[in-house]
Length: 180
Image 1: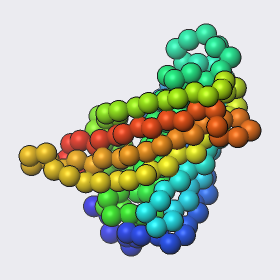
Image 2 (image 1 turned 135 degrees about the vertical axis):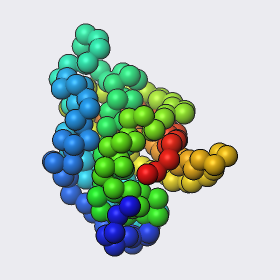
Image 3 (image 1 turned 90 degrees about the vertical axis):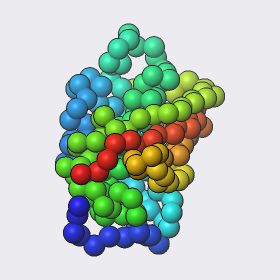
Image 4 (image 1 turned 180 degrees about the vertical axis):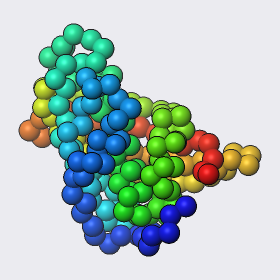
């Protein structure tokens, strides 16, 4: 558990990109699968928004398709979601993640964070060599299954080049396991 001051609700806060935190979050990814370049976060009451810049120099699993595809969109989403959670922890924001330490995050972020539902709708091709995204945590809820606490994240993400209208994603993540 952390002992720093906790902020359950934030009226208005912008958190600049943290290069060291991004490097920490992307550490488990192979170098050719590190798509997230930078991300700033805005917190306003219950809303959590992240504005990101991403680039795919070469897909980690397929020859260049010339555009963002669903698999690379999901990898990009994962990196943004992990960084957003790490930012909540680092700045002690919110009633859920402000109780976590970075050690807790590192222990849980790969085995305990499970995508339970995802849907991506593409309206137009997105040049994957350099693109932008906005991730929104629409809700963070806790609930119990038997004796175990779960955390459910309902999120949405928009991708694009000049505008963010190339692809829309809706992703639900459930965090299983127990805090230590």
